[in-house]
Image 1: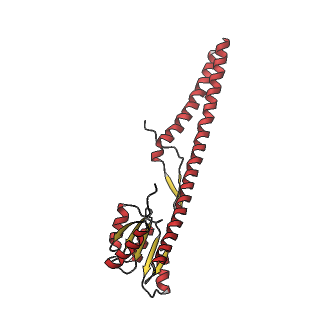
Image 2 (image 1 turned 45 degrees about the vertical axis):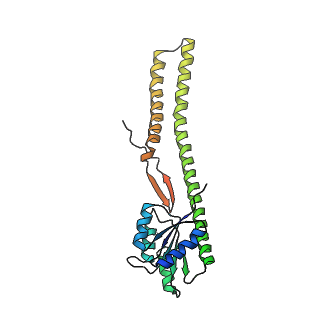
Length: 228
């Protein structure tokens, strides 16, 4: 059973915060409350959220500052944020919100249906984005597996070929010391190549992960250090 989306409500007014929590809770969302931006940052550091609804005007840390800090943090940068603004929102306020990374705005007073529609839209967008990121990760893992399989397969073919050759000469009683001395170093070299690839697989927990786009990561196939 899928867990309900977790939404963080950030609002310094007790009445407004409670009202938002009631609206969202009735829709089956798991709601966590914070009284200002400082508490919101503490909450996001403790656990993950699927969406944040935040008031703009708050003590200690306002919604713009909260939004900017969340978007600058790689761990919280993909969380959609809906800013709740005053009844008369100027163009400057809207541009400021967009500049710090807000995903949507709601002006007070708002209808419950409007709030829920905006929330559902942002959650759906995040779901689609998460799906794309997961697909890219699976594709990256698939490409890595193909690369590793190719790197293992080539030396294995060499090992099997030399072993079959030596076995054939041995069965026929024609195996010479010169042939043996020629084949063994090549078998050893190919076996070392397989060992190196397996060592890199063991070191995947230490592999370098690089980000080439927001939310998209890849793995470096550079050889890791052996454990000895």
